[in-house]
Length: 358
Image (cartoon, rainbow, N blue to C red):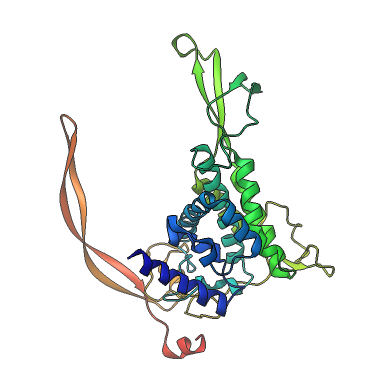
């Protein structure tokens, strides 16, 4: 069974690299391959990535875990939007053709994927899963915060190692290119890495008589990935459209009324498509058949989600847990309740509209 699955994913890799080498990042597929990543059988890796893969096979597994998590976080952030971070059905690229566009969606994907790698590697260091790193070795002795002096102890997350490895591995492919898209990807990769470090927090344990906290032992810990996802989503909303400098070394703001992007901002070159109908060249899955909220006026509302095409309503039976009671000791027992509810789904576009976009 494994050999069949591995063959299937390697086939997808080959198609990906053959048809669209600039569209997809092959390391994203490590989440699908799981623990048996074989460096030489992952097409699309540049020489530096392959060297790191051979030297740090245990870290590659962490990158695979990170890929699963950032994809799930991306889909969570955009679950109520026309573009919901899902792949085109049976397409060979992870995000359809959206990567062909230097859009704000592409900016978010590169930022959250880079953040996911930092998060996964740093966590693996702290959990003792990697031979090349452990807890942050710099957090020793005493320090101060607004509550006074404390002793460093426990296991502080080694975020600097996570950032360093993620930069070396993820950026390696973009550094091979000299075009505007490579520059954009490098900027957004860095923004994603910085976002993880932004949410490091100090956690402490008190020592003393009756928890008086006369002495404290503290360590630095990452927040969960959703915190970073929420932050990068806000950066997506405020992403800045730019153009490449003539010397090819940086960006100029496309609209002079906007501020120059900082290292924390997301940048993009091209306007996004509306994602209303399936358009493989634009990376749009379309919204036909998507569930919408009839009463909402937000992005998940039927008027917005369905792009004015209208929606169908069907009655479905839903089974929920209800009348739950706690029984001593210690079981909660619930009944199953059946209820009919209305589900609204977006209508498909008319044939003429469909043909215009395929």
